Image (cartoon, rainbow, N blue to C red):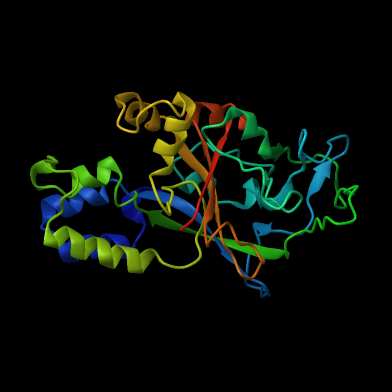
Length: 298
């Protein structure tokens, strides 16, 4: 499905606030995403494509993912690629099988260890697993923690349905800055026109609410997440304005984001969001071991 085939309040909003040239330049950046909608009590008309929380179903012989030296990861969510509208997205997702997302969420160590893009030693604290279609799987019980003072619990299971929606780049993303600048030229990266400020305020209101999705643009809480991953790979010694950060950031795309969700009893920091990113060529080759992760919160 092409972008123009998807009606969206984002398109209407841009055309309300800007002259045609600027509006169409910004609209051209919109990308389709598979919005995952929590339905605690799905009805007969709801097509369930995945779930938050609960216990994972893993193939026989696959052990529960563990961060060595720290403990088991927590199961966050799974999605059935065969039930997703993969043909309507612009990333090469598998057309079948299941994606399962795991994250070391601090239950075991009272949040002492933290997964950070700038620290390669922490990258094992998250995992994306692609389970092939037809694989024999069994639901796994939670790993036993050999410490009676530690409670390791599963999140509340919440079914997910899906709808395709257009998503916008972050308001501080360089591409947004260019699109909303007269003539497509950014003279002052810290200044915006009153017209642009009013538009971005309306955009923020439109994008508020719980936001889980596959593909599309990330909805960051703080910095553009692509730049955060690129900066992390360059190392903490690199400056944020190093041109290599912006260049490498272009090679990353959002795989999935899982938001704070009250129905699933998920809280990431202070109402934050989990993000998994991947290079499109690695996604096409099913190299989910090369996915990168970051978490942002207020």
